[in-house]
Image (cartoon, rainbow, N blue to C red; front, side, top):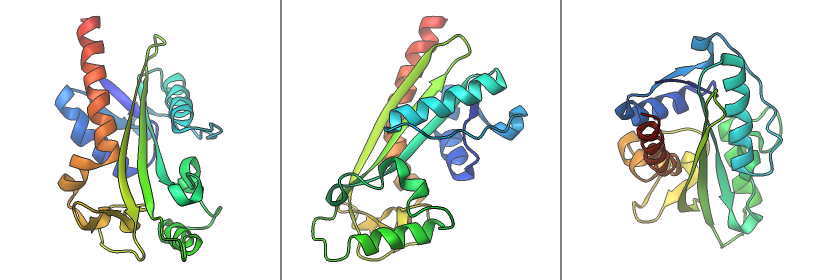
Length: 198
């Protein structure tokens, strides 16, 4: 089955391909399907935004489309940056700018609990929708560490690994990450769906 990834993020493409290829699912970029969709993420939850993106790309491409909406939710900031993780601090900030702003906003805060959340949604042209959520608990580091990953990975500390996401290998990260967990749950739902459709 060929599905279009509702994202221009190469990191997400690699992660999705790594995990979904085992299901016989070929994941392609929007550009490979001849579409370029800008979706306004107006949802209040990761679930809503994931569905908005997948549905828009599915309608444009006429093919099944998969979207991931994910972000970092910090307890002491009432769940912020949350659905605004990629836009935290407004336009003009890069990944490092966003996590530096987050660290600044957490200055003096002892409760560092946070979680990465990922919601994956597949929209089929026949109207069927498959969705799954994954979470990875952690703690906000006091300073960035590590060179791997992207986004908030350098400041997301995993206590049992004693490392940030950016210090883990891609394999280590996929085994415990929010997206890895969401994709695992999604794979099970997809396998059941495909079996049912025969």
